[in-house]
Amino acid sequence: MNAHLISDSPAWHSLVTGELAAGFDPAVLHEHGADAHWVWLDAHRAPRAHCSLWWQQVPSDGSHRLGLIGHFAALDPTAATALLQHALAELRRQGCARAVGPMDGNTWRRYRLLTERGNEPAFFLEPDNPDAYPGYFEAAGFSPLAHYFSALNDDLTQEDPRLELAARRFAAQGITLRPLDAAHFDAALDDIYDVSVASFPNNFLYTPIERTDFRQQYRKIQAYVDPRLTWIADAQGRAIGYVFGVPDLAQKQRGATLNTMLVKTVAVRPGRAQAGLGALLVGHVQRAARDAGYTKAIHALMHDANRSGNISSRYARPIRRYTLYAQTT
Image (cartoon, rainbow, N blue to C red; front, side, top):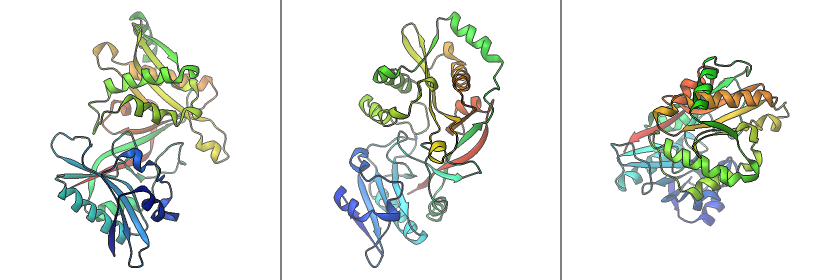
């Protein structure tokens, strides 16, 4: 077997087809700005695995120069191991001390592997992968770098009694909550972006994002947004926090009753005056969802060490776990 370097999208499109292309849109190749694309071919020159590499515009972990492996897919363990070892050698050649994956360039895009599937069905926009993939990374010498989970609140009637006091305290400070205005979606995105870039820099492997790129990502799901499930907190004329939610449309796709919403993101500007605002936003959106007829909420894709996990634990139980891997090159 041998590796074949693919440096242009048309060639990638011609090779990455069928089962190997499942769940992957080759149209993102240019958009994601990878530094290299690789497809692993067998002895008959049939594609068996593919990935992209990033080593120039990458996040920092504070101690290593990172290289990223993303756009990963493989049809068998032999091809997966060979491709990942080849990727490690290439990142080493580029001066990277640690390889992280799977990550499609940064944490604003798809990253992590689903490693504990649990018994609950997949939810809307949840990343998925064949169950064999974690084993592929481990066989190539990768170890867990970070862990994440999703949790289910299956009873939206429960409320945290401390939130009423918090709501009065924030109201006394002039902090108000408003639902997303669907008629002015871009303006709402600007508020959400401003809060995000202020609150996320200390997040694990954070990478800055331009406002135009942020808008582009959120516009992709604009048609699925229920304005009752996204709330923005304002103080003195500017947004200081938000909770972003969407319906779990995977239920409709399965032919089930739509009764679940997803809490996708909670963010609050740093500052002692905002302490507890994230918990209030989560409690508020869950109450709004209940009033809108939803009965359950999934708190999606939280880092084990993030504050959002502490908020979630007041209502929800973990149903799924995910892992991001790394290896010293």
